Amino acid sequence: MEKNSIKQLLMTSNFYVLNKQLVKSLGIETAFFLTTLVEADETLADDEGWFYQTSKTLEEITGLSNHKQTKCIEQLISLGILLQENKGVPMKRYFKLNYDQILKFLNTRIEKTLNQELKKVESKSLKNLKTSFQKNSNNKEYNINNLDKELNIKTTTKLDNLDKIDQNSKDSSTSSSSSPVKNSSSKEKDTIYQIKSALQSHGISIDTCKNIMELVRNGRVDLDRIKSVLITAQQKAWGEGAIYKALRDNWEAGTSETKTISEKELRKKLAGKANMLLDDYEKGRIEYDTMIENYIEFCSNPIFTEALKIEYYDKIKKVAEKTLVKTA
Image 1 (spheres, rainbow, N blue to C red):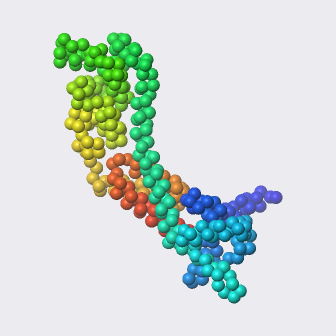
Image 2: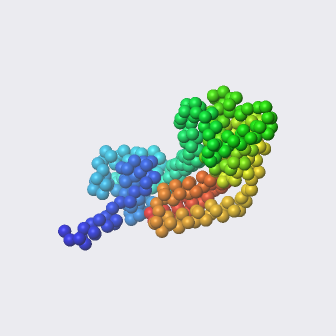
Image 3: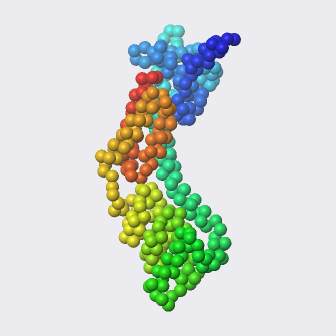
């Protein structure tokens, strides 16, 4: 066979294109069967949308036996996607597709996927921070047994400088007291060490660390509170000044006194991203699922409210549905 003949054989016109969401939701055989009915509807349907296809014809097109066709038909009818009537002389099997129900079915599945993906993306940064905190405690026993020794070694690391800051700060407040680390239990030592490690991992400066450790000594903040604020700081791109104020002034998560972005600016950001994704989708550069995944990842930023996320998701979905209907 010549090269050109092989190319012609492999052209897309010789293949069926199946919607990924339909395959996931209905199974590949029913999704294939529905796609075949859509093609038949395009050329055979009357003014009311009814068309007929015999079991033999459908088997020749799809390769599905009469038994498998029946199962597909029953599934589609149960979902309200397909209507069937037997009429005419001789009696023939007529079908009618409910496109409104098809879109409703797809929307329900996509929204479910969206909610699941949103939860995954929104918890990603939290998971990464938890992993960072866990790394610092992988060798707890070693850290506890060697902490006092390490505190007395003069190095240029941030953590060692923090220990010096602790000692200097404590000496300035009471000359008769020794280092709080040395007077603490092993559990307290480990907690203080974790706090310092968390601050160091976040890149907090020595001076700010000193101020935060003063809050720890005064009992105003603990390890859990510091972790919580650091997570929020990473999500909202806070500077260390805002981090210290959040700890000192006990800001509530999500309601800090940081600079806010107006709703107009947020809408502009989401609209720009939505238009870019839709343009790529309409021109065939990305598939529907990829477009939705990219939108989910973009709007996972905590600066966007749930209402705005859903509003622009609905807009993307409606435009994409119109594109889908045009190309069906």
